[in-house]
Length: 483
Ligand code: F6P
Image (tube, rainbow, N blue to C red; front, side, top):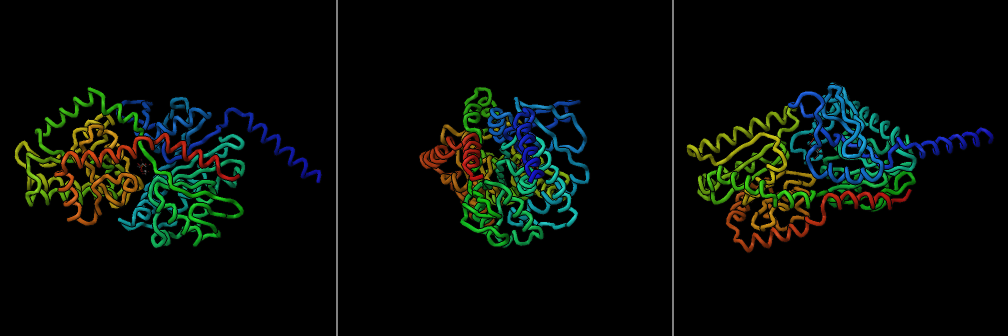
């Protein structure tokens, strides 16, 4: 009895000390990457904010709560990560060369990534990759546990960290844990392939709230949890080991106001006009912007456009395509092959249909500044977004937010999460080449009224539901979970 009372008293004292300790954060975000990245071109210690609305939205919620962001600085070289960014504290989670190979390139991007994206490439299963994944996840859990305040809140992000919720719960049962998956969650038949499926499920079930991009992913997960773990309940509320876990869809979005503002910036509008001029003042500019990833369907899209030049439905000089392919995961063999094949397709298309001084496709393998992307969105009459599978696809939403003149047209894969909201798009099944060609033809030839109606529908849906709204609604749902 005495011993028990002493232990309780000690634990209360420890708890009070933790609560008073202002070095601990009320809200911790754990993600595979930090919100800043090292810019190697500029010599020593030049860190820049990573682009995208996610960083802005999470930064704004962290700023108000003595927040901390834990993540990988993106390099295996020990670097001097700045201690803070925009008033939020940063903690670098370094990984070794071996972990880069086995945790990042291996289990995260050659097992989970293809498995969760419809097995477009065959997922590879290696036990030593799994070990590295567990090891890095444990390091994250420990780092969070050491830095979160008593009864604090932790928001864990994405497929690289699916074991962290359970590991963290074991270390710190007092904290509220949210998890958000940015990519799709696969159907049962595919997930069942994973030798460690039960561990992943148990890992995620350590959270109080598990968020997905779309309802389908949430119900895939809940069905899987009921089948392969002791969880019971409905698609939106599970009971597991005596706890209630909320499961739901929280579609991520963009920073609408920032994009609208950029799209009205006179310098960016002038740049957009200059781009059209440089493209030879064509009647119609078609645009693709993707991370160079085999899930994005870039080659299929180029094949479709190329066949349209072949059959005369598109005409060199009158129609021109721009494809931006942002370099990604370049040390992975699948990505290397994808780049090679894509560049071959681009060169064949120009070789067959281009003219001197008049290529039919302009290809950029570059990471462009966001302002330049906005100028391209403004210059494009038809935006083509045709992934085979995509958690959300923010390019589609960025394009829609840029087009306040209501003239742009969006061709969108029905397998992108964004398709659930952007119903005004010309929808395609990216596996159906004839269907893709037909949708591009309809988009190119759509009259101004049809384009306006479709675009205003999509803008109405996207404007208010921006990335700030996404972050707030996730955190509100997390606060409302039972503890
Ligand atoms: O969409 C999932 C995601 O992990 C994003 O969070 C990230 O921006 C993108 O893929 C690129 O991934 P990586 O961090 O591997 O470069």
